[in-house]
Image (cartoon, rainbow, N blue to C red):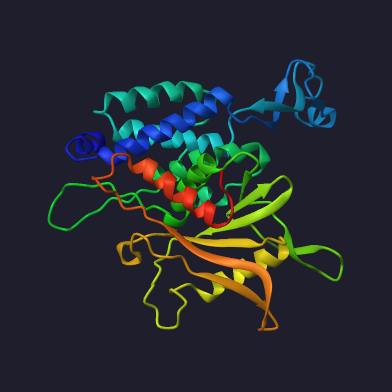
Length: 334
């Protein structure tokens, strides 16, 4: 059993992620699982929904106790909930020897009683549709993918199996940053994640094309004060051309945001590393029009040191302080 093998490993990080996932699903259950109308067809003794008498004449001529009906039923059995249930079953199997996680997963599975037990493929996860009704599922579904898309490792000589989580570090860095920004924002400012979604162009037929989706927009009232885009890439302060290793395509992207959103402050936010130093100044670039005149919008290249330091009494508090400093550099401060 995989659960038995997991018990022999040091899985503290994996256990923390599992408990975090359970907490996310608990919050969804208490809020109410998403339900959708699903169309059913059945032969019933009484009319329900839409009756198809022509079908009855063909299949059950002369009988009145078989009425072929088509009706809509509100149910929690939909692809989003099936994925969460599959992930909970995976956790239950993985952590058979972990009493707390096993108990949490078994309790949560009761909430998903009317949801079908089906296998979930990676392609199904990637094709999963999203809309306003399931926006609050985003984090839980991302975490479900971690467990459902794991890879078993095999080094050839032994028979022990391991469990490897393959993270989308861009998505993880963005999720962590979102949490930190929300806590650091002063009153009078609001955070929009991946929105508002404006279009960059309009076609000749009047239809909009090329939708933009910045990671974070900081709003002051209805005005977009700053845009922050996270990049899980390595900055190079010793870069000979003075670009700090920043991709030209990323600068093009932020220039488009600055113009389309009429935003004076745009930020490329990276993970920090030891080569950047503790008190290094952040590079700031002014966008130009016709290659000479400054447009008024500025690009700040900034970073958050993520490395865990045992000497810091509160690592999370130090991260929060770093994000507060980032906001202050774009004139968002208490």
